[in-house]
Image 1: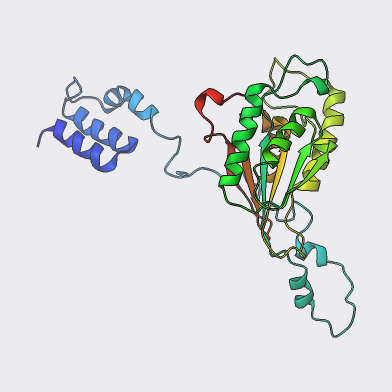
Image 2: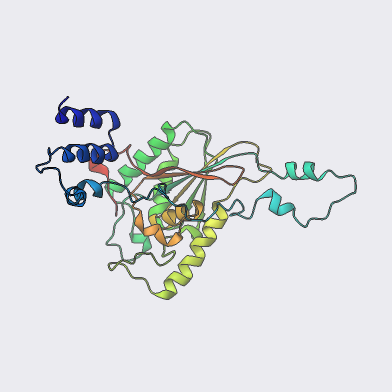
Length: 302
């Protein structure tokens, strides 16, 4: 069997860079890479490009190294086992395990974070920064998408800024049911949550803005992103219409990623980010900035 055929067979079976290196080394030893058998170091030096395709690992450590940070199940301070610590029993006959079971969340919260639609960037103040005609189209498309999911939404909370309020009002017209309650919240207003790492040159809020906005956005996270209350019997689906910085910060915090990495993500206008919070405190990101339901000519990121 020719070495060319051997290489082809190896690539087809293994399909990986390891097979590429091994097969190339075998061919090289027989002179098929343009040289005769010779010094091993010289031969392998000609395979630098092939070796570069290999992941950085050694025989002693051939798997990715964990960061060492364990998942904090009490991240929202609602872990039943932590809440029960130090509580005095009501009576000597009370079963502590029964008390803890009654205090355990049983429902899953689904939080759909919507970035507002495109708005008028030339407005002098918030009242003038209303949606553009395209922005209103985007809000209609997002509302249609949420309706098509066939979910029973419990509440629609939105930032009090004009662009988020207008987006929420348009979306609400598409939601199924007798009418989803709309709530406005100042905590969800756009801002600078924390100084990003790595830093950027085109956007540099001062320290005071980070100090003020960061505390407010963190307060919004603690209010809205947590596991279900033990009294909640059924899974819930809640919509929050707000802003890109707020959503990205929420995602980092909820997944226990470094919050200063929030600016490494990008979100389209009208996109859907879906967080699921289990009764155990586990958090999953089902979608991040989903805007695939919009035609390409409707996509913006302003």
